[in-house]
Length: 165
Length: 165
Length: 165
Image 1 (tube, helix red, strand yellow):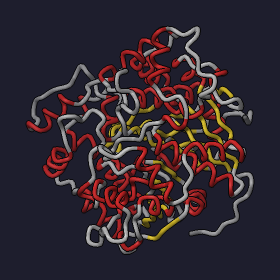
Image 2: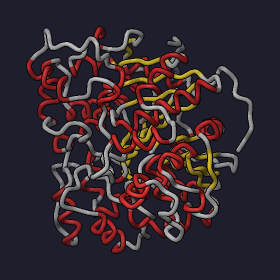
Image 3: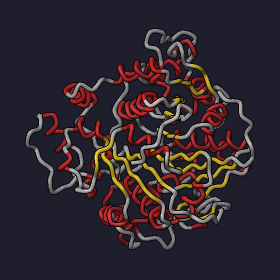
Image 4: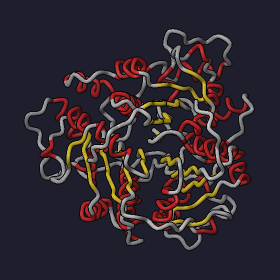
């Protein structure tokens, strides 16, 4: 393991495509850890990844087509509603993972998300994804900004680590 | 967001492993957007990702083992046949996503693929994957070239953004 | 394809999150190919990726909570126990993929893993993941070292290609 100094101009850029509970957890752990060593962190939430940054307080069915309503209701509405990726997990569930993490005093996803927001991780919502899913800016966490795919690429070009999760 | 100039020597390299409709869509949107800002783009299709670049016109069952035939028939044969990744989507389907995208005038996967091909995105098929799945060069889109994993790594080394999708 | 010389100071860093058979296979093929052109390779196994580097010989149920026991028994215990990612694969299975690979004289996952270990790929286990899943160091392959997320980020910063699989 190299013991290089981490300078504060290093940057982590995550494209969060998934809304699986475990993948969102992995993304937030990486984001929070990167902040703890003074790396800048961008999390660009696209497609299902938008679910992580929806604001449960402001979710609305108004002015949506019936398809958009169905989509909104069937997909998760906040960090604690995310499903677990199902790989080899039939018979186990998020509850079990949470229980085990609780035993180890490891915080839950909601706490990881709060830590990310408090520590300066910048969250962006993919413009095209938000439009496609009928999610309006007011339905996202207050500090979230909308970003195009072009903006994402430019941000990623300036980052040292880029991951698609 | 940094407003750096994008020079035409910047490159995006995508290893497309999945053949989920939504992930293929994400890959193509990134590829097309990168081309629109003059980045070079390589999409290396491996494993299930090969499904995206199969030519529906030339799919054949000749000279295949029965296992290869079954594999060919059961996996998707072109961009419109790809399944949706299933995360939290039980009860929803690709049709719904397409419908919503249609309402927003967002093109379907087939159109995205055409745009990629027209705009100079270079598609490669993983040699080992093609051999394993019994897919011959003639069954791929005409311009697709075969590439080894070593070629992929060399190409990725020269790219500025590398993503595994 | 650029024909650049590969210098032995080039590095590939893989964060293996999944324990799907096909994704683990992809990770090992990339790792082995990178070693064959003298790249250094780090594989950081987190979450389900830990399954790849569990030692089937030393798996134990002792000193585990009942939840940890259930988790250990239900998740895979070694490379040949990994499930296939299910994308569009209903009706096909790992057996079929293995059969086809066997026909082409392509080695199975176990052999790929042995090749990786013999050729100097460095495998690390994510500390938080191991603690959460109740997996002890003795239950991992002997040469595997424990690594924190911070260590991972520092290692990734020094790598030329970083992939999340």
